[in-house]
Image (cartoon, rainbow, N blue to C red):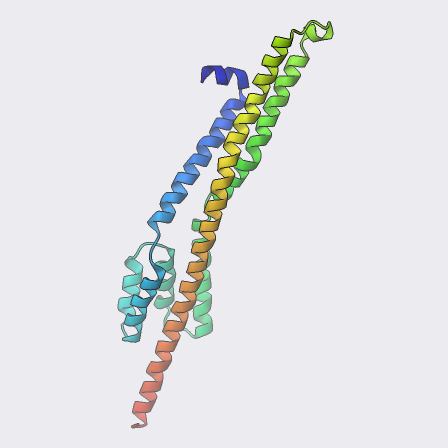
Length: 216
């Protein structure tokens, strides 16, 4: 390790910081996505039974105690069950947008690491080559072949390290970005179904009361 630090120079620490940051983001996001995961279909079916039975408050309580953004979106819709359909849609959309920031948190940082790391590696390579070819012995034609090979090897180490950080960072970025899009899509679906569920149940209840009032 000490030899690697000496050969690459100060840029080794810059690349190391980027690698640690990327690793921390990947670990945190994977744990977060695992923690918020629920079966949206089963959850919505349970909420539907309660709402159709006229137990909206109980349904809201059930949604509020579950972890995850989908449950929070549904709980927000149920908390405003008295609003009109258009207003409820706005509530659902606002709730989804509030969750999107947390879902996508730090993911773009991986793309930055994947983009910057190889550039820093190339910078280290250029610095190494410039440092070697600026030696006085080269101007006199006295540069040994072995010394030149060693200098090129040292210079290329930084590029190799930069790429070894960038490639996994980009792969994890692609995976986490795709996963976040799936979660956001499930939130939008949950919000839409919750709005339809509340409004349809209310409409059936109003129609039943109207028919009862007419003595049908």
